[in-house]
Image 1 (spheres, one colour):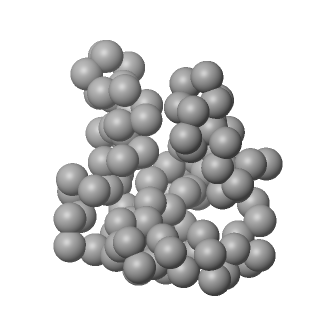
Image 2 (cartoon, one colour):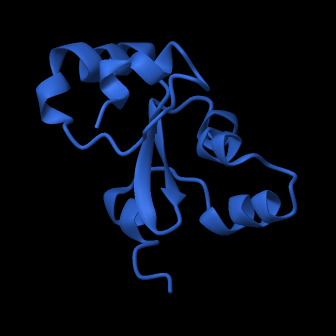
Length: 101
């Protein structure tokens, strides 16, 4: 169902429509990691945007200053890091504390 797809609308956050990204992933025209980054392309002037991994909402932070604030100053408030990145696939991000579970 679409039970959670109004998550960003209720919060007035710009977001990538999940159905267009999923269709392009299924046809092989878009890699799943690129789908998560669609917000950069669709909303280049925004500080952040939203996306969905299936029905789970996620945020894509565009603004370097906001990234700095989240990863350094407010790190303790962002404890639910849902991305697990393999160090074998990405040695830098795979060892980042921000992506540790």
